[in-house]
Image: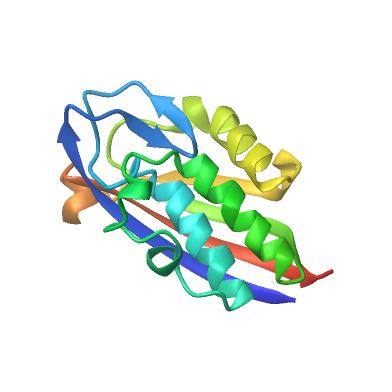
Length: 157
């Protein structure tokens, strides 16, 4: 068994869609980044890569590579899963936390879990997503950013 942890944070800006776990969330602002800036998918990828000892998302999909400009993070997640499997591991489960003051994410959780599970090749019961606020503290609490933490459990095939 191998365990990995991932983290990501992106600034909220006007003129971008808000995408979390591959789901477009209705909101007046979106996350700024080279790709679609899906903080949840990025945290999951870092957790998977870390658990397998395969580096991190910045090494795998560099933000200075034009090939990844506006990339769909679900596609990057599927490619990460392929790397994990090629390294001889199977994903057991994912546990994650998304920190956002707004918008409220509970209404979108089933869709987010389903979309992540599909991209990971898992049953939705093996994917946990917990939204939290930051109680008005820090960039997330002030509505300036959204962050995510994820853990991944792998086992050898």
